[in-house]
Amino acid sequence: MRLYSLSVLYKGEPRVRLLKAAYDVSSFSFFQRSSVQEFMTFTSQLIVERSALGSRASVKEQDYLCHVYVRSDGLAGVVIADNEYPQRVCFTLLDKVLDEFSRQVSKMDWPSVSPANINYSALDGYLSKYQNPRDADPMTRVQAELDETKIILHNTMESLLERGEKLDDLVSKSEVLGAQSKAFYKTARKQNSCCEIM
Image (cartoon, rainbow, N blue to C red):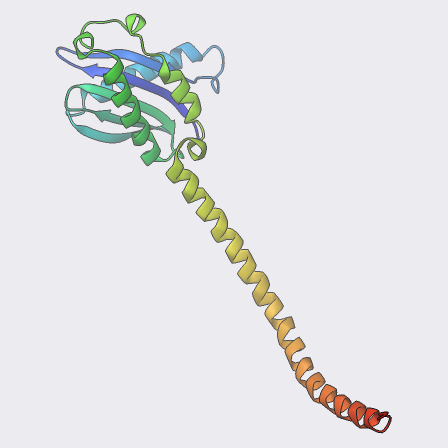
């Protein structure tokens, strides 16, 4: 599971503007990184341009999923991830980033300011924090712990069933031992009763 890009954009007239972006292109070869980053920026702008205000969508492009959230005020976010990354975590991240961005950056700046002049530096931190959805998202962590518990429980049940056959043998032997031990107890009691000192 991997996140490659996290972008904040503004869907205004006449075109979509990139406000801020963070990229993790370390898994690509050195010579491809700038081209991959440009393609991610282009794809993010294109997806936002073709999405309606107030909508969420996930678009598949080869081995990648582009998750987009365009708010009704025109502020938009795009996460580009691999196919395995959980969709719910992507939209949780987009909600968090867009809310924080709109509190820190004035709405008046969205249509005109360049990305270099925007004072918002949290995207790189979010991109690295959310690389492992289990660590970043409590719901995913709980689900993973439940899955682990379920596996352990299944293994325990299987071992109990295997032991069940052995336990049945022990139970049948204990029934035989129970009758023998009662006879031994009675015999021992009789033997001890003759030797009592009064």
